[in-house]
Length: 549
Picture 1 (cartoon, rainbow, N blue to C red):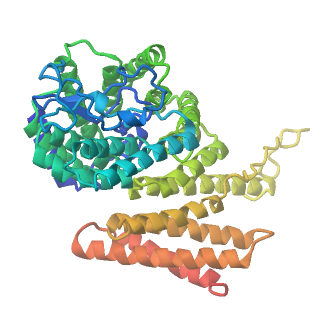
Picture 2 (picture 1 turned 180 degrees about the horizontal axis):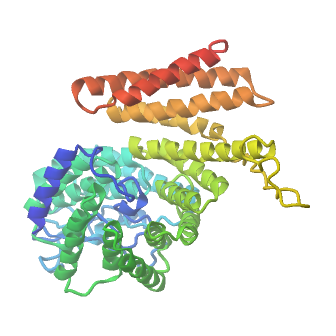
């Protein structure tokens, strides 16, 4: 079944082109689909794998570490400890070979860097990762950078896993790219390990078609295994094929003996939530969270991820305030253990923003949204779709508040919204309504630095060159146009700032229009209507700000 699933997945990805696939609340850029747990706990999807002598993928766990928070000794890294390889049943098969023996098999104990819990906050985690980088640099120098040296090859895979945990995705890409040719040459288990981790990386980079191709190759190289099915289920979820995702997760349970564990409750609960089976999903995710908190309290990042999943289900079922509590709790855990620049924190902040908006708490929603956009704009895995959605939500929050304030002001002045003359009860004045005041937090100018960072990041990665890029650039230009307008009307507005915002807005809108027109001309997408709107926005900007632009 696993190979059939993967072949269908590859076809789906190629047909949908990755970015244009079905959209649903749990899109790939959200933390729920992160492949590697930053706290070393059981991965909720696409975990990096150790492999046995039969080439079977086996998920790495941290139960071999006496102190899950302890920093691995430098002497352990890539040392080839001779731990026995895992056999086809996932059991140790016997004495392992030495570090310099080409027949040496991989085992979980060979990957101490990537198994580090990374629970020490942003600065602490960065310092630990830099220590691993320094040790790797010394090892690379001592071996002349020769990937045929087993010690360096293992260390390269190990450091790549640690980088993925810390969302240093560009660095992980470079490491895995340097190791892949030698891993392919050596064959199993090296190629399976490297392909598994590369699939994980591609998923985090929002490169789903490439992820599917790697999973297809893996399925052809390995016997059926729960990890493979769980990974497939995760990718199906990201493509919106939730029924097939549920089938994969349930098949994985069968392969593990038929009794669902807490990780299975988590996966299945998410699939059922995505299928709209909320009455089943919410209690299942609540039960999973309870088990995680009882059984792995030392894994706060894993617990935060489960809280996010529960919050997603609660929000989908209409419990916006309860969802906000869970998103907030997850964000607090991420802030402490991985820092506020982590994509994990950004995803929780985005969810919190959506829940607070639904709960009618716009000021708090905008605060959370600013934090989410700041993370999205600067992360290695930036993606046009979530950035567009976040900017659209920011505009909607501000416009809704402005409309309410205008309606209230009109009512106060007896202009359309107040009581009609003579419409009073004898002896009583009309009942007054409280005025709606603009919340100062709802200011798009707060997003201007993040928009600038996002523009540079998209350009650096070549994500501003197609239809998707054109659409998100149009939204970025719209935000900056509003920033210019707000700055112009402010009592202490600065003309230089108005000029900078308006010039940047016109430039982005022109670039966006050119991309959208090209997409329409070539048949990539019909963006003619939004192109017309963009043209109008450019004309209005030039008319309004021509004297300062």
